[in-house]
Length: 125
Image (cartoon, rainbow, N blue to C red; front, side):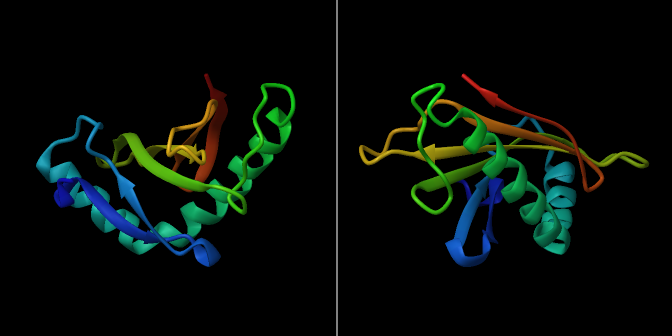
């Protein structure tokens, strides 16, 4: 894995997880800004991300044959879009739960932040 396009982040009681952003189309300068922002503010993002994802996972449980949570499954975190240009702080993170066969479960969960506020979140199929 290209370590310049990922960052290890603390996810509380779930340990340290690799936050991947290889798939996001960001410049090298933006990569440096993104890493700096995540390193300084990850705890705030993680708290909101955890709460929003847990709520969405509970809502789809049973409806879409989905039964996963941070407590029961491993998970991946991925930044798939960001913009830290002057006056703008936009970050989109995807959470993927992993089943016992090491496959990504459906749905995945997308959370979009403006500054530290969640402006959109949804399960994606």
